Image 1 (cartoon, rainbow, N blue to C red):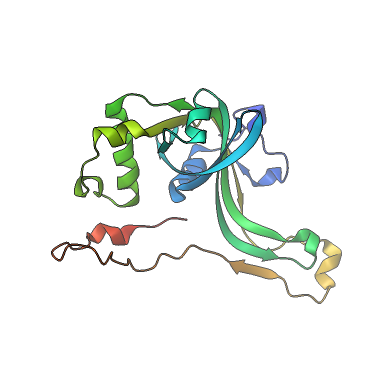
Image 2: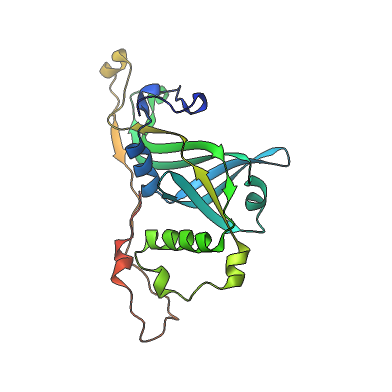
Length: 215
């Protein structure tokens, strides 16, 4: 898709960085499970961090049924933003400082998933998306836990991405100024797993834990 799916998703500032194709948008969403959701609660704007995952053209996140966000957003217009910082871009002027990044912004109406079977399936998808096969290794979810957990969905029909890569873009006259310019790469480090000291003696770490990656 080369055009914005709606007027409110059209990128205006740095529009040449805009990406509207499904492959780019899905790739960023799948690479970063951490996101922020913006909504209105009692007439005031609120932004809440969430853990998100995707199935097809739908975004999902979960939380406590008692939380302010989960009580507020069902049936409400929301905006979800997912961002990955890839580098600090040091230009020859402070005005042209930037970051290399990948980000997605999604607009739409959030809907609560009330079917227990679908809730279980999506929660399993979330857990297994982080560590393959982990859901079946865990103590089964109880009915009470499922009741206390809210699951929300958001269609990806109105989504746009921005992607910046490369070196600083200075004014032509600034390339003669004697200041160092370049990119400081930024990434998320995943270290070796640290076992809980209260693990049972005969419990070993599943090898799939080592496959965890994001960013």
